[in-house]
Amino acid sequence: MSSVERYRPPCTSGRTSRASQSIAGIDAWGSVQLARLDVAAEIQLATAHEVTYVSRGAMLDAGMLTALEQQLALSTPAASGRLAAIADVAALALTEVVADTATMLRRL
Image 1 (tube, rainbow, N blue to C red):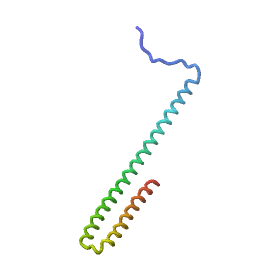
Image 2: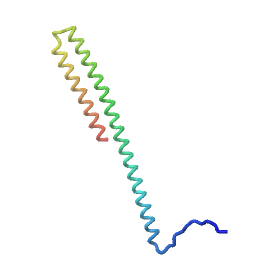
Image 3: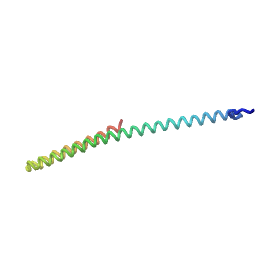
Image 4: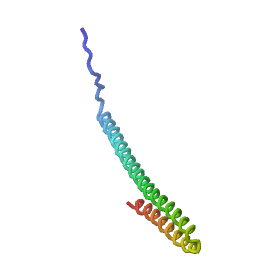
């Protein structure tokens, strides 16, 4: 009876083992590069989530400021110009916070 044995290529020289080592090195380098890309993608995704969170809060606040400005202007029409000026300054400050947050997160 014959038995099945694992094939072992004949070793003609050290070239075969050097080629295997080279291929293993390329494979390891590729794995490291993929890991780096995964980490970079996770960082970008976290940054996008944080910018979205801050932007959402700023937009809600801007909407509430606008509603409050309109209500106060209806109850006190003479102050509508001043109310608009205050609301504009507040909206610009909210915009600045969102822009500063995006810049700060980009630098991390």
